[in-house]
Image (tube, rainbow, N blue to C red; front, side, top):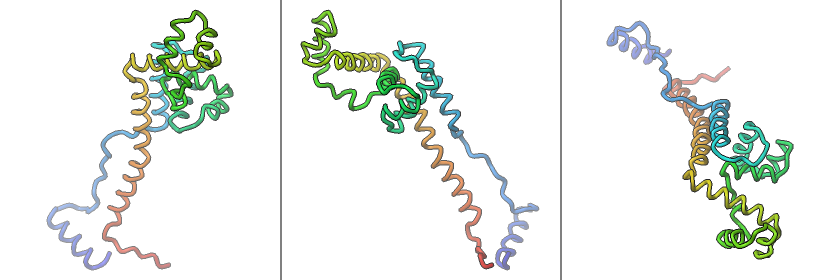
Length: 198
């Protein structure tokens, strides 16, 4: 402690009549979500969807949570499928169950209105496919997309909003925690001369 610092300390002690100049630490307001808390919240949302909607795969709730995390991490269906030891088609169907659509899902080789008309006008999937000049598997795939879009509109995109809110909270946590730590260090060392000589 140099002479100037000692003088300031003495003045502070005289004015405040305190015995110490150490500031009391206060807790930072708010809560920061841990990975476990995020997974719990995602699990709750997925479980609610499973109760309210007709899921089309045999994946567990935990595996559906993995699909959510993979989707928002921009992982391809094939990469998520490898991690879950399942097929990319199963992951794609799980994504649609979760109302998580990609640009590819919406890039159909026909207008969705035309798909609706073909399905309405024909008794079989094969006949609808013939009318659209595509394979039955293509009709089956985009019919699932159409159904997911209808479900999304029906619930006002509520579930995707929930996923994004949960994951955004977590994304803000890391930089916020780092900022709090850096600010605390800056305040602790502000105005102090650092003697780094050995």
